[in-house]
Length: 215
Image (cartoon, helix red, strand yellow):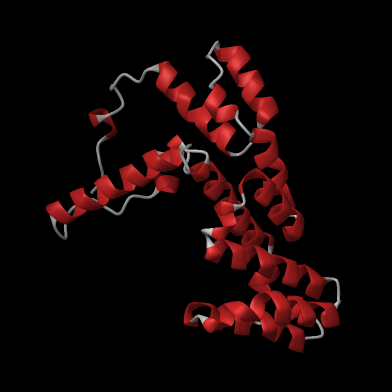
């Protein structure tokens, strides 16, 4: 069972609301040129508070995404040192990115020294122990890309860390840490789950954005 499209397809949607959702996504991801073009095409007003520090966020995001974690840390501290001081998980993830880059560059001695000086202090807390063990295990493989921990070397892992850093910066700037599009999808998913629970076992199917976009 699924919702009949006739129940919602005739609901009027304000174009300005749609534009705001798209603009939120572009600003969140630091697509400045696209933001400028979109504003010019739609006639929207430029949200000055959203544009604040966008270039700095963009540089930080791309350094993290490229694996240049030390530069990302340096620029983040220049923007607001307390961001990483208050977020130990994010600090660990960024330092681990640098460790991974040393491994990928086959600088194992340097990686071991970096782990001993920068990562080992995190081992005092149990929640970091398993992660530390996974990262250190990379040293045992001649081809770490073929190890069971290969995902730690992936673009997807760097993307995750870069996204978390970007959200932390946005939160520090008192800006939404998630795009309007993400919040709408999250809300739609929760609503569908609640409807499914109320309807019982023969109720609505679990919400799938992929299936919804095909409908």
